[in-house]
View (cartoon, protein in one colour):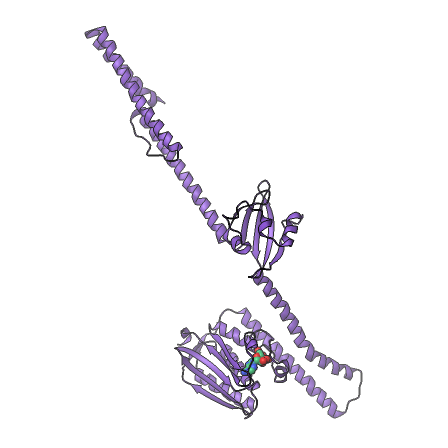
Length: 432
Ligand code: ADP
C-alpha cells in the first residue's frame, strides 16, 4: 500500500517544491506554470498506462491475451501482479486440462462401454468401447435418445422398469453376434450412466463348461449302467452259468477300464489346464523318444500294420513327458483308425527350417466337415469305432493343449478312404 502511495506523493511533493522555488526566485506565474505542466505530464503518464492496461484487457476478453505490459513504480507493481495472476490462471487451466485428458484416457482404456445420458436419456458422451459394443458414435449420435440406437425390446422394457441398476443381458441379433450386459446407473441430479460389458466369451465359456459336465456324465453313465445292471443280477441271487459269469465279468472289466481311461484323460486335461507353459523344460533326445514310441506302436499293432520311422532332425527343447503323451496319442490314433495291413509313417524333419513331427496313415480318413472340430473334447466322427478301440474322445484335445503349451501348431490333412496326416509344427525357438 505504502509503495503505491509513497512514490507518486513524493514526486508530487518534489514538483510542488520546485514550483515554489521557481515562483519565489522568478515570478509566481512561472511557478504556477511549472506546477501545471508537471501535473499535465503526470496525468498523461497515467492515461498512457491506463490505455495499455485497457488494450491488454480488451484482447484478453477476446481470448487473445498478449504479453502483460511492463512499467515502473506503482503501475509496474500492478502489471507484475497481473502477470502473476495470469501465469497462475494459465497453470491452473493446464492442470485442469491435463486432469480432463487423463480422465478421458482412463475412460477410453476401460474395456467396458460408458455412455453419459441426460435426464431424458439422450446421449451426451460415450467412450470407444461403447462405440464398438453398442455402435454409438460419440459425435454423430449426441442428443439422440438411447432407445433409438439400442433397439432390443428387452432394453426398451428395462428403461421403463424399476430394475435399473441391476444388469440386464441382451443378445445382438445382427452380426457379429454378441451378448452384452447393460446397467443403467443414476448419477448427479437425474443423469444416468449406461455401462455395457461384452460377456460373449464368458457366456461361451459357461456353455462349454455345461456341455463338458453333461458329456462327462454321459460318458460315465454308459459303462456304469452295464456294471450296475450286472451287479443287480448278482445281488438278486440270479443263477448264472460259469461261462456266462466269466463273460459278464469280462464285460464289467472292459467297462471299468473304459472309465479308468476316461478319468485318466480328464485328469491329464485338467493338469494341462492348471499349469502354466511346461515347467519341466528339458532337451529331448527326439530320435530316442520316437524310436521308443514306434516300438510301442508296433507292439500295440501286433504286426498288423507296417510302421515306418524317418528321422532327419535333431533334439527339441520342451517337456518330454507332455510331448511323449501327444506323439503317442497321434500314433495310437493312426493305428486305431487304419485297418490291418495299413501303413503308418512317422517322421521327424525340418520343413522350411521348422521342426515338424508327422504321422501319416492310409486308414479310413476324415470328411472335411469334421476336421475343424476334431480337437473339441469328446468330438468323434464315429462314436462306435472310437469306443470299440478304447477311445475316450479326449486324445486330440490333449494333443492340441500340449502343442499350444509348446507354441506349436497342429495341422490335419485327410481324405476319406485314403488316409490322414497329423502334423505338429514347432517354432524354430524350440530347437536347441
Ligand atoms: P478318440 O479317443 O475318439 O480317438 P481323439 O480325440 O483322439 O478321440 O480323436 C477324435 C476323433 O478324430 C476320433 O474319434 C476319430 O473320429 C478322429 N480321428 C483321430 N485320428 C484319426 C485318424 N488317424 N484317422 C481317422 N480319424 C481319426
